[in-house]
Image 1 (cartoon, rainbow, N blue to C red):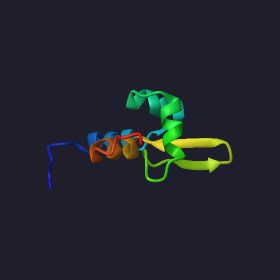
Image 2: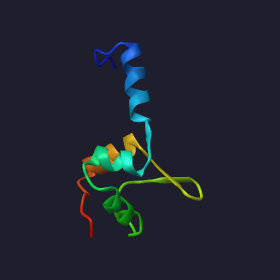
Image 3: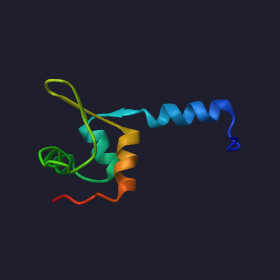
Image 4: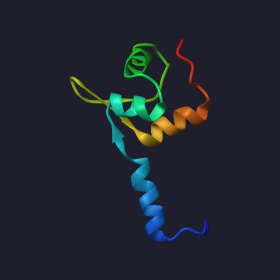
Length: 77
């Protein structure tokens, strides 16, 4: 299927969707405070998917943040 995109554009879109962000960057991207995003991590099934590659490091993938926003599950219960 041709979406009218050149290979370079498809590759760029893939790279941009796989951008890693820390909590502050993710919160800025989602237009919320880092504290709100941190609080969401402690509530089961609340907030976007996150990764914890190291004991004290939390990371988010941009594509996961976008999927979470698209899902409409933006409540902070």
